[in-house]
Amino acid sequence: MLDNLTQRLAKVVKTMRGEARLTETNTADMLREVRLALLEADVALPAVREFIGKVKEKALGEEVISSLTPGQALVGVVQRELAALMGADLGAQAAQLNFATQPPAIILMAGLQGVGKTTSAGKLAKFLRDNFKKKVLTVSADVYRPAAIAQLKSVTEQVGADFYPTQTTDKPVEIALAALDFAKKHHHDVLIIDTAGRLGVDAAMMTEIAAVHAAVKPIETLFVVDAMLGQDAVNSARAFHDALPLTGIILTKLDGDSRGGAALSVRHITGVPIKFSGVSEKMDGLEAFDPTRMANRILGMGDILALVEQAHKSMDVSAAQDLANKVKSGGKFDLNDFKAQLSQMKKMGGLSGLLDKLPAQMQQAASTANMGMAEKQVRRMEGIINSMTPLERAKPDLIKASRKRRIATGAGVQIQEVNRMLAQFEQMQSMMKKLKGGGMMKMMRSMKGMLPNR
Picture (cartoon, rainbow, N blue to C red):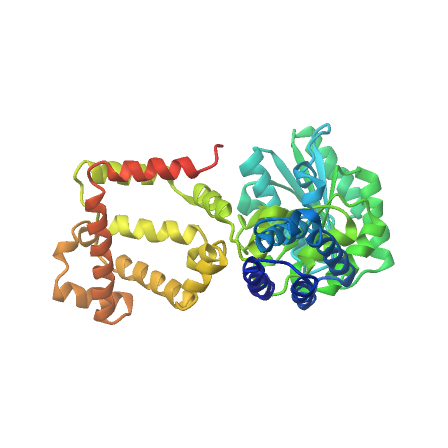
C-alpha cells in the first residue's frame, strides 16, 4: 500500500529526526524531498502545494524552532498535516455514515465503470450488517450492463443481505423508487443503490444519476474511486462533485497500488471525507478510513491498532479458549491445533497482510525474507497435514518413515518437507508445554487487554 511514498517519506522522517537544529536550508531540503515523493505518488499538484505551504509555515514557527528535539517536532507537523490533507481536520463524525433519517437510510453509489462500485456495494452491505446489525437491501440501477445486476445479486447473497431484482428494460428512476417502496414495506434499515458507470464522464450519465438522486434523496452519496487511476481519479472526482452533492468517498484497490496519490488528492478536490477504503478482494475487505492512522502508515510508523483490531475480528476466541484449557489441563498440542493456528494467521491476511501494518523499521527487518515464499510454505504445510489420517493428526508420534512417505506422496511434496513441517510443529509443541502452568491464560489476558471493547 503506497509503497514508494512510504519508502521515500520514511527516509525523510529518519533524516529529520536526526536534526538537532533546523535551518532554512535543511528544512527546504526536507520539503523538496517530501514534494518529490508526493508528486511521484500521483498526488494532485494543488494538494501538494497546499500541503507543502502549511508544513513550511509550521516548520519555521516558534513551536518547532524552540523544541528541544526540533527534528522530531517537525515529524509531528508532517504527520498532522498529512492526516489533515486526508480529512482529519473534518473531525471523526464526518467520516461516519449518517443514519439520522426515517428508515430506510438510502446510500447512493456513484463512480466510473470498473472502479469496483458493485463489489463495494456488497462489501458495504456486509460492513453494515456485521458492525451495525442493519437489515440491508441492495438494488442495481445499471440497466446498460446485465452482468452488473447479476454481479450485485451474487455479492449480496454472499454477504447475507437482501437483493431487489431488476431488468435492463426498467428505467433507473423507477427502479430506485420501486426498491425504496419495497424497503419500506419490508422494514429494511438501509437501501444501497448501485448506479451505472461509464468508461468516461459524459453528460447522459450525469443527467441520469442526478435524476435518481432527486427522486430518492439519499442521505449518503458515496463516490467510489480506484486508487490506481492517479490523475484520472482527480478529474472524475471533480466532475461527480460538480454534478452531485457527494457526502463521502470509498477508495478501492488501495492494497494493489504502489503510488496511491488519489488517497491524498480526492479529498482535497471534493472537500468531502474518505469514509471507506477497499483493502482486499474479499467481501470483508472494506475498512472505515482513519486519516491519522493512514498518515502513520504512509510515514512508515505502522498501524499497530489496525493489527490488533484485525486480530480481534479474525480470531476465533472460543477456539483459543478451548486450546488454552486443553494445554492447561495437560492435553497435548497436536497437529489439528497446529493447523488451526495456521488457519488463524491466514484469516488475518497472511504474513504480507500483517507486515503491511508494522512500522517501517520492522518491515525492513523482515524484507530480507521472501514473504511470498513464506506464505506458499504455509499453504504446503496445510496440505501435508490434510494428507494425514485423523489418528496421525491426533497422535503425531505415530508418524514414522513409512507413514511419512505416504503423506509426502499424498501432499505432492518431498519427504524432506514433511520432516521440516514436523520439526516446526515440535517447536510449537515445546512452546505450548512451557505455557502449561497458567502461562497461556496470562498471555491471553494480556492480549485481551490490548483489544478494543465491543
